[in-house]
Structure formats: structure tokens, C-alpha cells
Length: 117
Length: 429
Image (cartoon, rainbow over all chains, first blue to last red; front, side):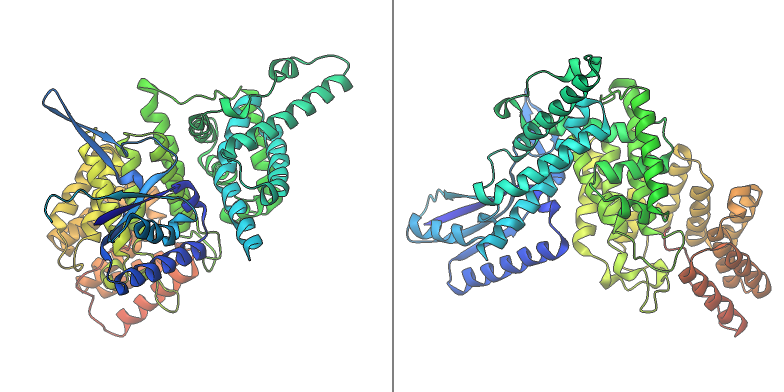
């Protein structure tokens, strides 16, 4: 089964980090991503640009409404994701716990609905 | 190890939350110095407690509650000492707000009010910038002083006078709305861009040992666009900063001399910053608000940033964008850049004719980039003596040593008989 691991992080905290700290986090992500690949479980994964680049689009009465910013007004913002192939939810959660962002934010583990196979 | 990690985490959270808490305290107390004293007490308390007790669920609310109590204690003591209850103490001496009633949005709202307050039109732009660096971006007095190249004592006095002036006139503590907003927001954006350009083009001194003002200005704009959404000019200014900052590594050579835009190694431009800046500009334009100066400048920067080389740049487009910029922001520097764009789009002779038309503007004549641009076009047109004379005038006007070295090098190359480079334009075009 495939699972999406959504990385929620506090952008204000990330912004307060020094450049050295940010580089250390980046290096941790590279190591983790390499490890997921080596284990053969990684299907996809990307960091996202910060939330000020986001636009939220909805259609009301046939009219497209665009609003500036992410959909949810929360302290945590979606900062990136991985898609992993695992046999069990337990394994997906284990991978989630190893994501560097788990130490500073939270990882949402969402099973992907597969219609075939 | 775990101990160190915990302390690092606490330090990070304090850095991230301090400005919001300070803002809310200034709003409640209407007094910068009382707010700062109370905040420092709360930060000290947090630094003692959090590594032991763990982080509170809502760090900003925790800090605010502790600081508010301290401030009230001070006000009460002063009231007793004065043997009468001053109005100020009476007003603020209500019971502290319980932590759970402090919504996270409160801190954001107050931070936005603080940004507008620091950029109050009653203050000179440089003072606005210094006050913003100190109170919104949490810089130390020494760092702010270094940013503006003045002794800390001088900066302290300036900031004190600015705070007193704001307090005397009663801090308005509101975010402007309606017809008032565009002009006031423009004041804020000017301050942010002033901080950025102070870092981008060091006006004097030898090297960039100052705090990274560009990064601070970008951080300020990221905050602003999250706090106040839907403002095309704010998004565009953030885009402009990212697009210009993307060139940082290529802007000077190993010896620290500036490298012209045309000669920069574009593989050293930061592609991530260019993509982000381009996307933010697209987003700003999508809001379909009247195109202000930052949207147009960001559009110009985006054309440069996404061009494979100086030669393969859409100069017609850039020239047209400068025409548009002249309509909303007709300043001598914009006209200078427009003349350079005309030279690139229609040839050195057309550009030189435009520059000569600007010779009546006194502020341009005292501005070294005008003479640098003239020198480059004259050189290109093989008018060597005039080119050398123009570069010499520029040399006499610059205070920056790296810039002076660059001009000296141009003069030597002309005198050695080298042909003018095909593409010549100031880096900031």
C-alpha cells in the first residue's frame, strides 16, 4: 500500500533558524531521502515553496475565486511530502518518525486510496 | 547532547516569538521601553524554565502573560511610590489576560500594527528602517548601528528620539485601511526596500562585514505578506528582492570588484530564488491590482533573471517596462536605467542621446552611475577621450573602494586601446 507522508512545520520557526542550522536540516533530508531510496520504498517526495507562494482556488456559483495564501490558517504549514510504498501502516509510521521535520513539526500519515490492485 | 538540543530548541522558539510578544506589549502598554523591559524579564524566565519544564503549548501566550504581570507590577510600584494612581497605571492595571484567552492571531495582528507604527510617516525613512530592524527584526543596538554605519551611542539616541516622538503623538496602533492604505503600505515597502538596498549596494566602506541586511529584508517581507494577504505590491517587492538576491554570488569577483550584469556567470545565480521570485511575481500580477512600481521592477528583474545571457535578453520588453515605470515612478534613477535599456534595445547612440537629455537633472550629475553609464556608451561608440573623462567623473563621485577599483580598471583598458564591450550596462539595470 502507498502512504503519503505530509510534513507540517512552523515556518516562523524555520525562518528563525541560522543558515548553518538550515543547512544541517537540508543535509538530514538528503540522508533520509537516500535511505528511503536504498530501501526501495520511495515513490516520490518534494519540498514545497513557502506558504506565501500559495494561492487557494475555489469555484462558487460557477465563478473561480482565487485567494492569496494557503487554505488553512494554522500555525503549521505544509512544507513537503513523501510517498512511500509499505506493507503495513506500522512501517509507514516508522518512516514518518525518521523524517527530520518530525522533530520540529509533525508528520501526517495518509494511506493513498488505490483503485486498482 | 539532549540537553544541548533542548536549549537550542528553546533559543529558536524565543527568537521566533519575541517580536510578536513585543508588539502585543507595546500595543497594551503604549510604551516601547516598558514593553522591552517586560519582554526581557519574560525571556529570562522562559530561558530558566523551559529547558526544565519543556516548551509550553503556546509559547507566545506564555511569554506575554509573564511579561504583562511584570509590567503591571512595575506600574503598581510606581503608582505607590508617587502616592497617587497615575492614569496610565489605572488604565493598564487590569488583571492579566489568561494564557488560554490569547489567540495566536492576536500576536500576528499586533506585529502588523507594529510594522506600520515603526514606518510612521512622521519619522525619517532611515529612522523608520532602524526602528524596524530593532523592534520587528530583533537586531541588537550594535547591529543596527553597524547597519547604518554610525556609532552605537548615536543610534541609541536616534532610536530614543523616534520612540519618544511616536509616544508623544500617541501611538495610533492600527493598520490603515481603505483609501489610507496604499500610501501607508508604500511607506512600509520603502523601508523594507531601503534595508535591502543598504545591504545590496553598500554605499560606503570597504566590504560587507555588516549584518546580512538583504536576508533580513527578505525575512521582513515574508512576514508582511503572510500577515497582510492580497497586496500585489507587497508580493512583488518580495519577488523583486528574491530575483535580485539570486545574483548575489555572481555580483563580485574573487578580488571583490563588482561584475557587470552582462559579464556575470549566470550558472552562479541561485535558480531556487529565481523560481520563487518568478512565481511570486506571477501571483502578484494575477491579483489584477493597478501595476505599482514594485510589480514593474520585479517584472524587469524577472526578464533578466530568466534570460540565458545579456545578449539574449528581451531588451524591447525591458525598455517598455521602463517606460511604464517612468509613468508611475518618475525618478532620475529610473530615467537613467531607462536610458540604458534604450541603449540595449536600440543601440548605444540612442541610449547616449537619452542620457544627454537627462544632463539637466542635478541629482543625476552628482550620481556616479550616470557617468559610468555614459562612459560605457561613449567607449562603445569609440569616443575614447570622452569615455575616459566620464569614467573619471564617476571615480570622483564614488565612495566605495570596490567600485573605484572597477572604474580605474575601465580607464586603463580604454587607454590601452581595448574596444568597448558589446554589452554594457550597470549591474542594477
